[in-house]
Length: 495
Image (cartoon, rainbow, N blue to C red; front, side):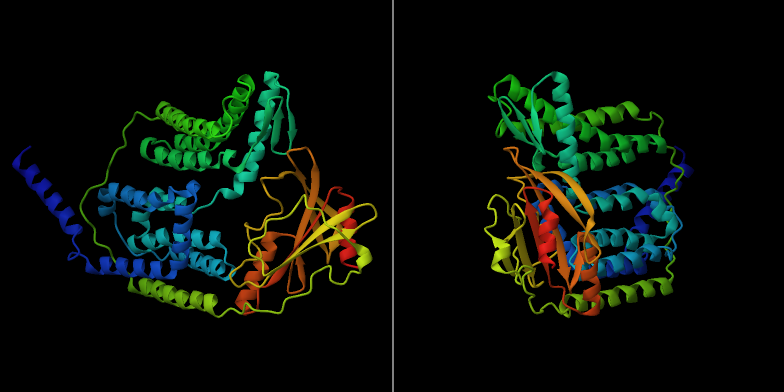
């Protein structure tokens, strides 16, 4: 290396050190600190609830490492960022404003999915705002990687359970093992197995998706190969979980339930998970592109050009949003007069002793009552629950139509010819370990309006919050051993 090259290298190093100095560009760092503070203040409720989920649900423990990991990935691109022309981006408003609106809707309806999605969409959007379009493009994946902080995926559990049960039964049939399936229960001569929520493989699925996406970004240079590998990381854990469930039942069948029962299958599950990740990484190494990336970026710093009008606009939007969301949280009217139970108008001749075999799971209702409705040939069970919206939630995943320890869902049918105020009713068929079946339906009554859809009921509650009206309402369940008596019981309730 000659003297000229040495001087150039020293200038380059000095430029990097100067570029990272707070004194070199105070406005950029002060703006960043200001917007970080406003993001934390605005999204505080979302951050507190998401940390509770990360800590309390092992499926989402990885959430603690996503944002630090994304920041480290950004740090790895520091030379490319320093070489990029930086101009405060007005295009980021197209993401910032919808994220704020989504957060407000989440606060209004107490929808954690909305608040969490908005929180971890707003953070990369603000980074985009500050560093500009060209620089943001260079760290596109790290910014998107922050979205893995959102604790989403539990909604897939019923579908993954069904896939695991159906796939393992198909493999068992190919093996020639005698079995009987009832919903998610699989019975062989040696014993009975339940494809429970813990056996759905949702943890495998989410972890594989995160690791697969990260591996593709770090090691695969071809966009086509990246997409293929991420797709493999989604499909592979589902197929592997089917094989795992099949293997557990096969071991139990071969050893007369001596192994693979009780805690054994959980231990096998973790070993199998490690094996799946190793296999996934081996596939990635096989696909890895041997060509090294060409780095054309120079490391000379280009100062951020702040457009104060854009920064001030976003600043006032964030401040107004903080005021608005606080108003939504503290000034929404929640108390209202409790309505009469749906069966209060029925005479004793229509009532009977309800079944004790089935009960829904209800999370802290303000009032709850259970009655039996006499139909032509069966006593149909009706459960009424009232939620005033104070420290409880009418539309919630914690309110379930059945106990998963006693029943599993077999199918869902829509009865288009049964309507309550022009609302079609869905009936779910349940199966028990003993082979019994039961049919359950539910609907919500909010402000004298009827909803059979959780989504529509929640959206209507959000609408009421924005109007400052109460969000209280009732949740009604109807359950029968025979499908044909469900419409008859509903007709009795509304006539």
